[in-house]
Length: 543
Image (cartoon, rainbow, N blue to C red; front, side, top):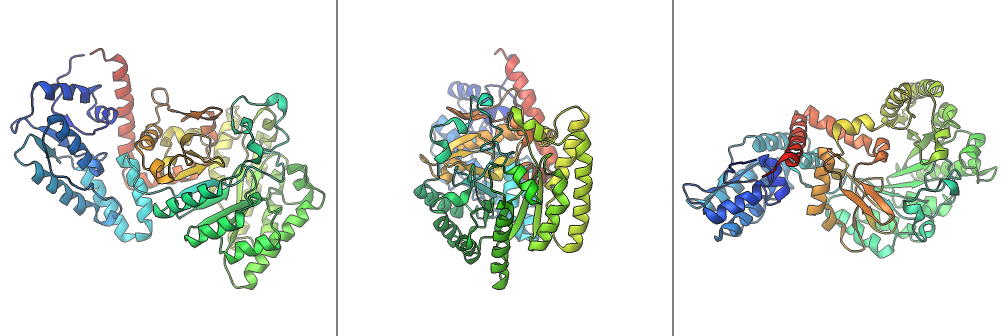
């Protein structure tokens, strides 16, 4: 294919530049053209301002100047942390660059109205709702192929040690029979069952999270029970001293008086209590290794902690009672609500279980069991509204997807298949996870993007490597671009079978719907279509 390449540059990243121009190898051809036919004031090299390069114009201009062999003034990059002032800051930035390049062989072309239109809308929304500033920066990052803020949620695995054996757990369930062992996964790595997060690594990480403005939702959770970490108390104290919003996940079995006092006195914001039963009988089905009185003891401990909190006139921690729905406990939804009401629990989260291996399909709701569960939850939602208890809305999307899956002859647990097909994966702007060994994952599944033993979190989060992974996730064309995010026995491809049971479906859905309501979703769809066409062109290009 013979293509006449104009003297145009969008990005110093060859892959991104070629995609934005729509011509394979455009940047390499441009460099060849420049080496033969040096740009002149009458035929300058144009740096085109685009929604996906406005934030790195100084970098692109500097690269172009180096190619041509000219000297230009050093300029600081555009600062993208004040959404209210972004349009005027970008205007000043472009004018400054134009002044630097005036009459020369480089020129800025800012004729595309899209960047200023988008930034103007973002600025107006940020002024109207200052509390949404960081969320707006993340949405802008999706459109701009960049990260302008740290993650909304950081999922931190403190400990792999667990003191129970929930049958739906993909890590400690008794259903994980030796004959069914997978050949790849964290459970197979040496000393996995006893692994705990290194304390020094923890200290460095929370400093990074505080510095990047990622204090909105730090989760102490993991592949085991977080309260089993010997430094748990110090870690809670350190997180709250840095004013991080802290959520602690627990099964409640270790919630003794000392631990309860710690959570209340330190002002832990949210306690996710994984009970998944409304009665002692059901509890013993769900956690078969527990003694006969474990349900009553656990409920009693949570009751004591709530009483300790309320007696001091405090509001934290608020409690979320989590109920993972399987066939064995689907009939307990009303009992769970009544227990929550009796204890003074503020929120209840119903969550469909998903298969973690051959033996797990027997746990999943079947077609004749789904409707009764839906009816129970609908009654719970009605009563909860009257009682002032929040039933988290995630279950609505899951139940709707489960119904469609079962009608089509599939299992009930592939709730995010259609969502990811429509939205792509947007988790990389809102979420990150560190496993107990310090490896960093893009999402709640195992997708390795870095190692906190080698790099600080912010180095990884704002890196070019992460930018490329986010781009592939957003553009969602796994046939042509599905990065391998594995390392040894852990990790996997960016898009894999477990994306059908995505744990970030709520934040992805919200981001997509927000971009739709702002009128910007067509930008994402158009980019995705252009990307797929570009990939086809790359395959057929013979130049």
